[in-house]
Length: 284
Image 1 (cartoon, rainbow, N blue to C red):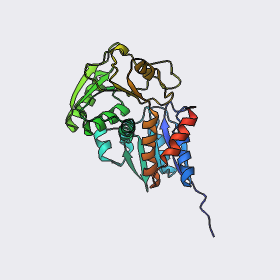
Image 2: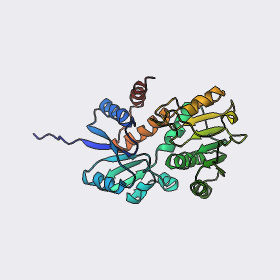
Image 3: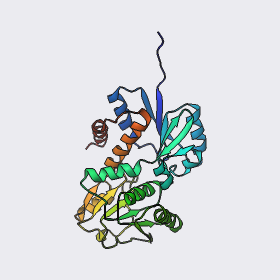
Image 4: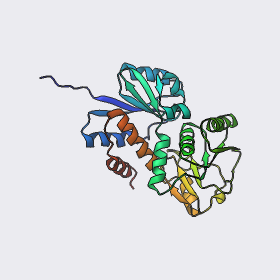
């Protein structure tokens, strides 16, 4: 009687990547479900993604996550995209179906679930998003599709910011506005949900925070951060000090990770196990 010694391989490509805890969370989920999957945390420098994707095919990996700076660049190496990924034009998870690479974006869906878990709905709300990269694209599109009334994009690079605004205007029915991010910008009156979708504050730069006018954060705002390491970011500390409700990046990370888990394995993810594992990692 023969035995199968081959594990299914998944993982993440990114840079920086050393402090990304996704593998710990996913491995705990695999173990809880008795699945022979391994999650590899792989540093792939900017410019090397093409070679890395060739390696994924050559090693018959089941799939991969993409993080900074590869979520948009990866599109050119994929065979198919989900409807959401086509609109967002950024991918954070790839599934290898017998050599055909299919891309999806679960970032925005994970973000919306984290809002729902905190008792917050984007329906009819004004959402301001700091940044215009892969995470910002996913979150803004999903918020617009979920019924947000207005999306405000603030970005340092005006071309990139305007490109996201045009995409939202073309693909959704939300009112969209671009604000040039020059210096400590203030939050427009009427902002309900503020999202830091930049990498400012990510480990090891935990002493940094986005350059905004924090005194313009109102107590009735919901302030969220995609940063999960450290989950108690300076950005959220500043918002909490002004009375705002805050939501850290752990919920988004776990919820999108659970969706990725199911895409790779075909099984429902053990959410409680994955969240508890992350909390232990961060001493929460």
